[in-house]
Amino acid sequence: MVWTSSALKSAVILNNVFLAISGEQKVMCGIVGAVAQRDVAEILINGLHRLEYRGYDSAGLAVVNLQHELQRVRCLGKVKALNEAVEKSPLIGGTGIAHTRWATHGAPSEDNAHPHVSGNFAVVHNGIIENYEELRALLKSRGYVFTSQTDTEVIAHLVEWEMRSAGSLLEAVQNVVKQLTGAYGMVVMDRMHPEHLVAARSGSPLVIGLGIGENFLASDQLALLSVTRRFIFLEEGDIAEITRRSVDIYDRDGHKVEREAHDSNLENDAAEKGKHRHFMQKEIYEQPTALINTMEGRVTHNNVVVEAIGNGAKDILEKVEHIQIVACGTSYNSGMVSRYWFESVAGVSCDVEIASEFRYRKFVVRPNSLLITISQSGETADTLAALRLAKEKGYMAAMTICNVAGSSLVRESDLAFMTRAGVEIGVASTKAFTTQLVALLMLVVAVGKAKQTLSTEKEQDIVKALQALPAEIEKALAFDKHIETLAEDFAEKNHALFLGRGEFYPIAMEASLKLKEISYIHAEAYAAGELKHGPLALIDADMPVIVVAPNNELLEKIKSNIEEVRARGGQLYVFADKEAGFSEAEGMKIITMPTVNDITAPIYYTVPMQLLAYHIALIKGTDVDQPRNLAKAVTVE
Ligand code: M6R
Image (cartoon, rainbow, N blue to C red; front, side, top):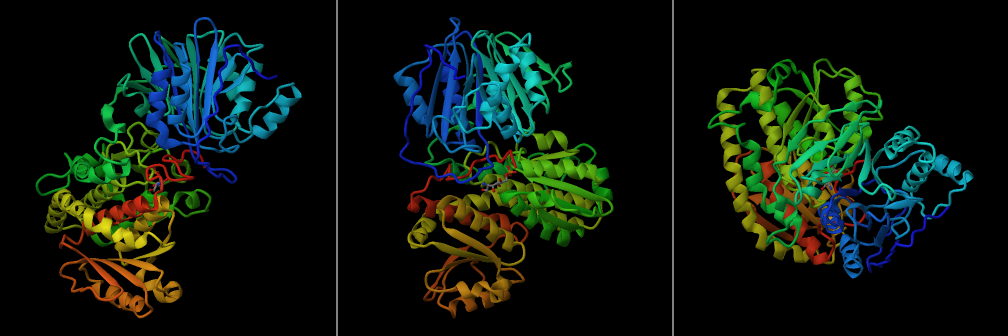
């Protein structure tokens, strides 16, 4: 049964950028909902703009008015296309739901865009319904006709089916979620009851925004900052019913519960680019301030305040004998840097593992082992699953180093050490990485102090280095113009190799991740000592080799590696300390960096690498903030 309404408007806007999706893309989308007296279409679209970093292959919205007319517009492409469509034929109605999508089931298309409609009901959904094929077959046998390839459409039809016997939309949604396996954050709207929305959360975040005489829903508070600053974060299994004047929340057993409301400290313009061309550029430039914020109240003039790590942190850190870090992507790379620090500075053994591997492996938990998850978003599905698994396996405690207050990792960990980077919108993580490193270094000191493995002098050295870092990074940003020129060499390149040693190896990993994700140049990072074991075979005049060469105890080793590359005609770009004794030669460009403290040098050298990736991407003409096939928060597996 195909839903029809005389008031249904449908717009197809073909974006000239077609995003080729093969198979499932396990990434996430954005949701906004509103119940108000005023027309909500503009609020919904504004919210979608702010969430576009989460998914951007198609978008849609539906509103209902008091005459029970449901109007829906869906477009292929970005929210801009949706906005243009709505400007041409405005939608009138005080209740609405909207969605920006990144394909999971079904390619990007107007038909697959949300909201999905069945009978009187419209649904937007983030996540993946794993048993959707089975449900689809069941619903077909009941006579429902599917108009999309999405898993979400089964929810719409299930709601329609359940409403035939349920006494309310709330009850229908409670019955529907019992039939779903997988992850969802969803909002359902009923044409016949236009002044309320029902939302459900399991595995995909949802917040309620509290207004005056109006209420809102979103997958991220960022979407709603222009209309409210007061939020309730739904918990796993919660179902909420919102009207203009009421918010009722029920837990997974159907009991009515109270959830605390929080005032957001995010700036309303957090999701604006300001004078910058891209969010990534803005976020690179925000790093000095972000680092200062991350250290505030945690580093005094000569020591790291252990108590500031969190309530009860001292007791845990005193006992810790091993650290297991679990994370994905950039956050994994910061964990890798910290492994060098934990072992050399605090004398505590440390393992670092990619969350998607850790969660499916049979591992042995060492005595007094502290689990640390690292995440910008706090919602990365693999990292969250790893945390939940680790909690069953008897780790001493679970700490998260995270940037988003109220996120799942923060709520489910024993200790949360917030990075205070501010909102990061660019898909390529920049300030999240450097603030993670600063937080990790403070934690290393705290562990060393708690375990009495770190001398006061060493602590003071590290504190001095940390305090000098924001100003040093400010100066590193002045390399921007030089790096912009350098980037021109990469215009025709298809591959790049990054080399580093010691804690600069993960910095090379992070640099290569940045380059590949935003410029689409194939980039790899190697521990420079591994060159002879294979990658040297790749070296020729078409292979740019970027080397991070600070003036540390491994300098002579990295110089030998550089010679190995030169001898084979590789094109070298060496980011070197001014005291390291390099000079330019044929096939070798030197980017001379000021001398900085050894301990914070990995954080410092990150910045020119970010700028390099950024400028190469500009030359390549890629979508810097929203690179193809990626989204900011990977909240499903
Ligand atoms: O939010 P998280 O830090 O948990 O995200 C982990 C990765 O998805 C993320 O770092 C990803 O690799 C970035 N796009 C890298 O720039």
